[in-house]
Length: 106
Image 1 (cartoon, one colour):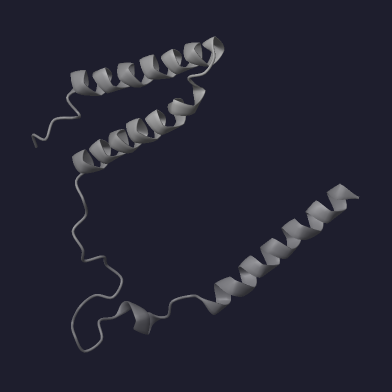
Image 2 (cartoon, rainbow, N blue to C red):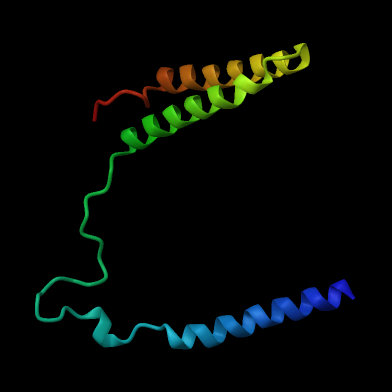
């Protein structure tokens, strides 16, 4: 019974994919520049640097880790787990520093 329901759901999703694909396809006029001369498909904003993205991820990782670990300080089993997580995160941080990916040099 469950297999039949899953099969029915998957076929409905495939049918919806074909129907919606026909509704939302781009035509030739949408690819051309209209009056202003700007290409409507390309992205014109500057992207952020990869170094800034990595530093942001490291900050979020350490910030969330400290917030989560504050609740596990109450017994010895969780303290072992906390030290394991901290050692892993500091090891990866030092590895990133050693590989030179944390520097802002281009």
